[in-house]
Image (cartoon, rainbow, N blue to C red; front, side):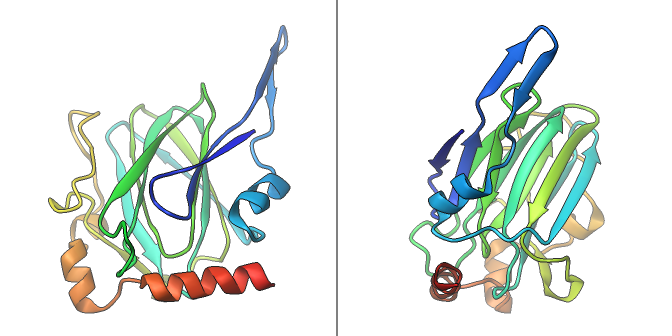
Length: 200
């Protein structure tokens, strides 16, 4: 398993080693010890979610209040999605930028997204199935969104001809509006929370 830091601090691409034979293939999709070494703290699994999406479906940009936030370890066991991590931490040196990882049922990569970061993906195939391992249970009162078509964030959604978004996501504020509303996490609070996790 190879764990590679992305251009957004506290986000990682995970590439498993696959072992094919005449029966099929085997791989380790998740290793808590290897991930903990990369993060500098344990990833606490509190909930697992699954979504199934048609081609063109966009989910996100979603994030949760920090603390406790909600770290995510995301995989795509069927189909393909382009998965985005967006730095929405006010004061971060990479604030407003993003990185992406192709998650599919061929390379079987995963992406780790720390608390305080935004997450979104676009489905590139019908019936694309995404599994999210998350560090905190869903808390509707602490969940927020940013419009994934925000022209300032400029996610690359060009891989599909027709995008399908929920009203919740299209009605979400832009990144600038979210900052003005005071709902974005800060770089300072995020670093303090990561340090608290490392000290546990």
